[in-house]
Image (cartoon, rainbow, N blue to C red; front, side, top):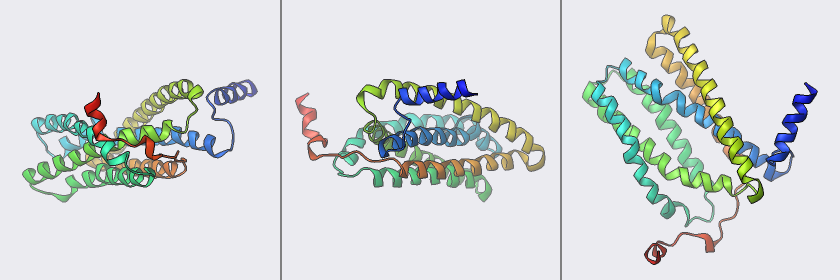
Length: 236
């Protein structure tokens, strides 16, 4: 155990995560935020979202259309510089947007099948809510990345990003396995819809932790000289 602890401490030192100063605490919270945010996204997306629509009686054509919305929403990344780079402080806007996306993606979409709406109304509202989620993620994504990377020293970024990508994948796949096992165990007692709803409640807990971890990440300054100017696109 002592050797394992020494190895872990060495890893934390190598990626500049060992310490109690503000910058180091912020970097650790970047990791934690990514862990819980990815778990929440996977508990409410992918096969679990497909299962929710199937349990609600949606057709295969509707499910295919929901997948296509992701590509359409990603186009709104082009709007991110105009909304974010003109702000001296991005953190309040990003946190408010993240909270909005979590509420729509986890709570509102999860409530739709329980409202006993007509199929046409449920499909229309479901598509609009999913579009809001994808557009919100597309706009917030670049800002969150810039915010988080800004607090990592340039000499440590490669090691930190390598640790982030590999550990997020491990945490996500372990969480997906446990979530599938939990859903299968709950299905006989609560039904498919009830089991998926329990997973969404867990996703809400992950979303709350995500916002808490984000609140503990320091925001680097955004000086006027770094702000995005649309006219610079014409000079490229």
